[in-house]
Length: 423
Ligand code: FES
Ligand SMILES: [Fe+2]
Image (cartoon, rainbow, N blue to C red; front, side, top):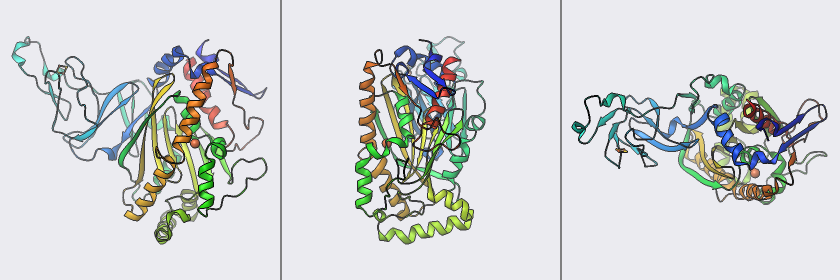
């Protein structure tokens, strides 16, 4: 089946269906790599992960091993992590600080600006051997927005900020938590694989419809800890109001009234009495700096923001940065980091990290349940030739506002996916 016909979108008839082959078929997976991952802006990392000249960390993005680092002038750089001799991964450490990178195969050595610095026995090469032309290479495009570093394998792609479009409004909302406007990745990376198609995690990351069922144990825990979890109003699934928003170009977000506490000035009993004055102080600072309305927006609402195709900012009971790399049609590698204001006090930082681990951690209330759900979906999709279509129509008959438990923002992702796949 042609890739562009995998999403059946007929608004007049109020039909929207996904052909399940999109989540299973290896040919579609191969096309996705080319049409989506080699054309879109992809998240590499955060500027705070490398701070001083020579700092580096390594990771793979779309199958390319990369070095994210600071050069001798302390500029942020991204190198393709492959030796120019025979291709060996040049830097094999996860992170560190180094003057030079030496290939462990034959010993070619590059400096931190990427120049080929030394070649053992260079005199055996012919006169046309030019070290200046054999430095570490860089992806065609690297740009950042407010500390978040992205790359694009398409040299002709539109600039990053244009690509992000209306999603910047929500990134800014996250950054406004910080007095200095600067956030940092808190040390440590969560890394795990899921036996499921990467698009299932896209959906799951901002699908609030599953919260009440998949995360029932967490809601019970909140209730038992003295957090007020109201009965949902008629027609709703969740105890508080929330919206789902299509931000254009496949980006989307939930935009929810918070009920579950936030390290940004929304105290709940789980944080402990001693954290109460600290959160009140943060609140006061927010109001002074941003005015009452914006402070309310920052502190009393939360959001799960998808940056198409594979970056999610979860600004809820903590801030998580989550990106995921497809490894095959039914497998992905997830990396997640906690993000916090650089000037945060130790007490506020502790509340943030506790929240991060309680909900999003690999042993938290959310992640194991979500992984179990996604792997169960992928297993169920083994029937994709017999059971071909999934409806994605919650909220489709409604004019105007779409709820967080509707599927309009999920549809927006799929519309963009189909557009790029058909191109
Ligand atoms: S492959 Fe790196 S030195 Fe030979
Ligand atoms: Fe979930």
